[in-house]
Length: 385
Image (cartoon, rainbow, N blue to C red; front, top):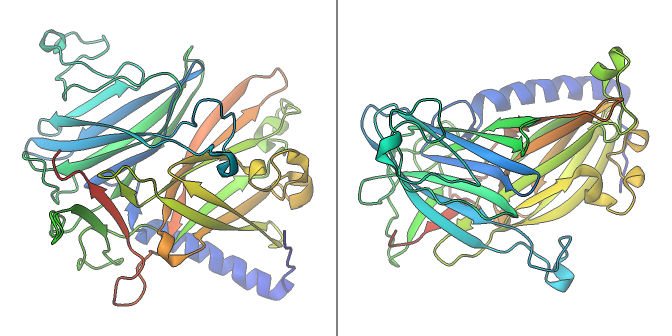
């Protein structure tokens, strides 16, 4: 752990620069959460005894739209209670793929645990699960699933295409529907060269995320260089609940989910990225930490640097020294590629009622460096869908 105290005058200037940087990032980011795209990624999909996930996808195409989707099962192997590479406890890579077809401007939905079978008789059963035109046979997940869902816009024959017509929303739901947490899918937009390397000279179907910001010289937009996370300190009293005298003793808890941008669906090889975290409190004192993301990772902020005692973590409010913080997440090695993700925050009141909210993370910059496109991410698809 390292702490650096900045000059007060410079801190003020840098604070102003950070605000401008966040505004610029929200306006010029390469991945999108409020626009349609050719690739959409739901980084956090959960199904277990306590939680489920509702998926909503809409087509903004005036013509029929085809997409190929991949669930990535990243649960730990049997017998592993916690991720630990030293003893082989790393997420499994189990791919479940399926196709969906949407009519012009059609929305569709399904629950992860149920999936959605094709049933022509339910087209007009409004108010019932599965009502409306079925997008195709969507498989149900087995209990214990944790991972992500990615959908890629394709031609009718399965060839990736440009179009930027997909938009999605995921809702994490408790099994008794008492609490929900919602976020927008992360979109990666394409250019007219979206299928330029499918197949490539080696017969592979590789989607290259190599389009620099503001240009159209690559296939798909690049993934972000930095994730900018604004959050309340771990264990801190929630200021809103405290205002009404309802703040509980548990305090605020933050759970970060990250996935690598690069994926190999053809060979079922998980991406691995080591990320560095620069954490700034309200006085712009700087702390640092790092960890590795293989395939998929959900982690409490305090577990990043102090998994056995959260009160010793740099993210814990008494150590952080302020109520809120900004955490900047950057890949440690250019060759590792980038990460994307979502933050889920849980607040608890005096009667142990909890409420959760998911937050899409701000992004800044891209992974393209120089004119040689070094360090870009890739998604390798099965040659035969």
